[in-house]
Structure formats: structure tokens, C-alpha cells
Image 1: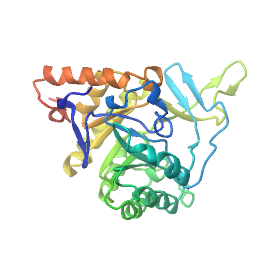
Image 2 (image 1 turned 135 degrees about the vertical axis):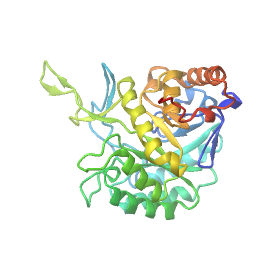
Image 3 (image 1 turned 135 degrees about the horizontal axis):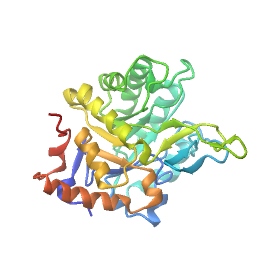
Image 4 (image 1 turned 180 degrees about the horizontal axis):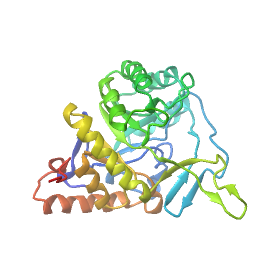
Length: 315
């Protein structure tokens, strides 16, 4: 179980541990419950929920890679109405916080899902926006276009009422001259309470015998150890250039498989971390990370993990 030194608050969302399960890691909600003790994590982030059910991409859509994991799930999910009917009644019994990830292809998609989730704010304290989806009107990802992102967040902020609104940013801003710090600043100004940095890296692998892409979707997202140094740099950049001054907490995501990985994120500026790929290899990864972080806080002469956020030494 996490120690008191690890108690973490993200924009009003108080968690017993800074370790969260990344979107979809536990399935739609709690499918990992048979092999993982949810008391070891501060929060579970659901699979990304859309307005309508989605079958997702054809197989293969998730593969082990030499440097991590490739996935092109295609946002497969049961849709918001079925989620509310089947999954929301289970949340009250879970021994951890639940954050609902939502996705869409238009402002109207996001707003419709957010409004329905907001009706259950009593058991769902926070929403995480997956803004890596292409805007059907603009052609680029919401998370790569400051103007589109501001429009989206302004509308979702109104629909979500008082729920904590976390925005999960893409690791790169394809097709725009903006850095991730620019995008983060736009998100904060438009109403984001916290940021998750970052989503998977676009990637591709080819079977050299058949000469065909290994993923049916051709390309997908790379997660796991290979992306960790990239994500640490992005957290550091956003913390120094946008989040620190505005007092916006960051959740570091990307390649956390040990307490050292989590500690790197904290020193770079993250107040919490998400574990995804590592939980598939070891469902008890969160417990190991908690134990290591507790010892690290003590060895650093601190009484709480929060004292070490952004404390990297640059001199």
C-alpha cells in the first residue's frame, strides 16, 4: 500500500498514490482487477470512450516490439451510453479514483460525451481528453492546433461543469509550427486543470520476410521503455515554459516501468505518473513503483513527493 508521503493532489483530485493506470490499461474499467490490486494505484483511467460504439482496427492491432509495444487499437470501445449503463454502476465499489478518458472527431462529439459523463460527477471526479484524434473539419489533430484545441476545451469545459479536466497531449505537433509547450499553454488558457504528457509516438514496423507492415493499420503508436527519455524531455519543457508559472499539474506518461522512471518524471516537473505498457508485462508494477518512490523520498530528505516536483538540478 502507498505511504502518506506519496499522497498526491491533481487539480482537486486527491489520490493515495501518484501512480495511475494509463487509459485503457485496465480495459474499459476494471478488467485488470483479477491480477492487480487497485489499492496500489491512485486512479484508473478508462479506455477512451466515444459517442458511438467502435469496433476499432483489424488485427493485428497490438504487438510486442523489440523496444516496447506497438498498438493501433482504433479507439475500440462500447460507446458512452453502454459505458454509463454497464460500467458506471461498478465505480462506487472500486478502491481507487476513476478518470474517464473521452475522444471524438468533432467538438460536438467531445461535448456530447463530456455532458453525459458529467451527470455522474459523484463517482467520476475527472475527465481526461484524448486530443490526438483528427478534427474532421480541420484535418489535423486537435492536440496539434492551438486554435482548434482552445475551441474544443472551451466547449468541453462548459459541458464538464466542475469536474477536473485533464488534457492528454500528443508528443509531437504534426503539421504545425507550434511546440508542445505552446500547445500546453493554449490548453491551460482554455480551461485545462491538468495535463497528461504524453501520448504514444507514431511508429511502424515491417516484417522483412513478407515485406508487409506488422500492424493491420500500417502505423500505430509506440509505447514502453523506448519512449521514456522523449517523454521526460517533454514534461521538462512544458513544466519550465508553461505549467510551473500557471500552477498547472502535469501527469507524466511514457515508459514508466520502475520507480526510477517515475522519479525522473517527478524531477522533470510531473506531480503524478501513468503506467501503461509495464502493467501488461507485470500487473504488480504499480506496487513496485510505490515502494521505490517511498524510499527515494526519504533518501532525498523530503517528507512528501510533492517537494521534489520539478527539482532537477540544472546548475
